[in-house]
Length: 251
Image (tube, rainbow, N blue to C red; front, side):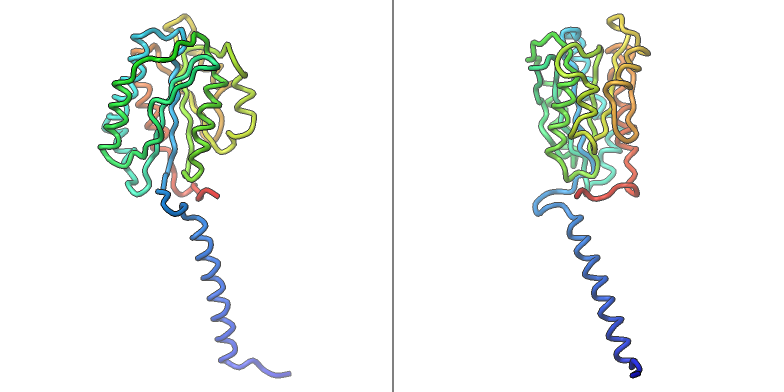
């Protein structure tokens, strides 16, 4: 039986090392975003309730409140914490099953100019949807479809604000248990008590029927006047809760 010489051992070890390096390089390339596609650490779609129960004053409190929340010092710090991997933001309005409108298309919040552009769109938006019903299931579908255009983002989150239960269109429970939401976290901002629906009862409804995914939660605003403060709390939870150590690159 012939013995293995030292050069042969070294050659075998070198082949194994080169093979390991090749595998690591392939894995790294596969984990990189597609050519020309910027790194996105989180896609955040925000759906605002503009159904018939929301009057013009409350409509403006939502849009202006979201704009002010985005300009909050702590929220900005969270948004800009990883400049090489920005958050992408989209905002849409919803009411009845046929009434959805994107008012801020996907925008990478990479710097102050991008953030100010979003804020300007929110502050200058005029109410266009006329639907009176509350179609939470359709609102979920709209947000889901928006987020499914951003598969390269490390995390995808849908925010839905609402001041009432669904009364038109598909049941939100059926939508959240269906296809397309498996990798999306759905959170809610409940606006309670202004119209007789207690915040506790409405929160329980949203927990059971609407929210889903890892670390999903319900934030509460006790009336539209508290919308801005509640949105600040909500954004800080979502943006600050991004633990890079637990994230994996999209497949």
